Length: 136
Image 1 (cartoon, helix red, strand yellow):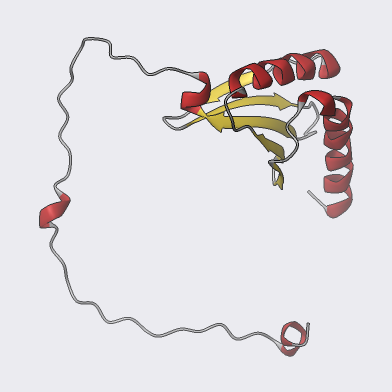
Image 2 (cartoon, rainbow, N blue to C red):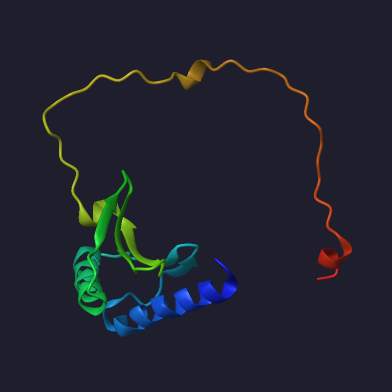
């Protein structure tokens, strides 16, 4: 994506963000290669994210995709035609609850207390910049 296309995409994303600033946190924003990421923290995270998700649905008319990892929860709105995405992100335990199911599984895991080591020879490297970069 060239710079003009990227800037146009980011402007569209900012228009969406600007239209719902009253339901977004004061800080915690970052521009990423995919678009804009908004982080949520604090005791009202679940409620605040729910309000923002509903607002994003209304403003964009798009569905919100939810993605989970062991540690994070993301609500993602993807704008059409490579319009980028807006991610609302928080710690998974802020919006989810971990419960024991009563089942047990047995896994084989590596024992890092007895890892073999070896000696290797590596070439020493360093960064060298062209004059145009060192003058900047």
